[in-house]
Length: 225
Ligand SMILES: Nc1ncnc2c1ncn2[C@@H]1O[C@H](COP(=O)(O)OP(=O)(O)OP(=O)(O)O)[C@@H](O)[C@H]1O
Ligand SMILES: [Mg+2]
View: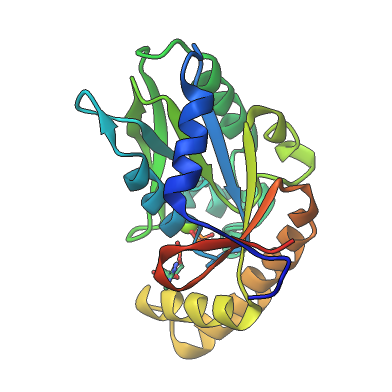
């Protein structure tokens, strides 16, 4: 680890966020952006666990950007199924609108959020319903992008970017596509022509993050600038 890196234990992040959360009427929103395969969903899960529960209710819940994937049927009609995963194959306006609702709705008022079922590669409407959770962890590729996504940044209390080396991304994504049933050739093509091109686009948004994280052994994540 070089001199300009800092180790950030998740429990310290949790303590800092909880100090900001107490006394607020609205939810605190942490956004985790980053390229496909960086480990955003994995980090979000670990963070949700680290926040724990109070009075039998989770303090933090995850609002995945992936829940706003357009359905396969809609992408097929538009002729965009092969481009699934690119910025305009999501309902970005729906994501921004519901994130605003989540942020501003009184704690306790139910706000449904769609999740994404990787086994069938389709969104699940109202896969999670926010009620008394005070912290939102929203994670996805395009949180710091422009265009239809440009409204996201103002809805985030913290803008994080989880980075990973390209060869790590490539290896993880290949494994994911092979497990999902693609042939080796099809998996390589998807990684090369789609995932890594999206990763390049996303990398250009890294400078907008407040905190750039990289995974380290032992569940620690380090700031790299
Ligand atoms: N810290 C880690 N150590 C080892 N493997 C990891 C780690 N984080 C993630 N992975 C693995 O890498 C793969 C991708 O992780 P994950 O699904 O969390 O990435 P993601 O950033 O959410 O990707 P996407 O943008 O495509 O949703 C998974 O197989 C996961 O198990
Ligand atoms: Mg993910």
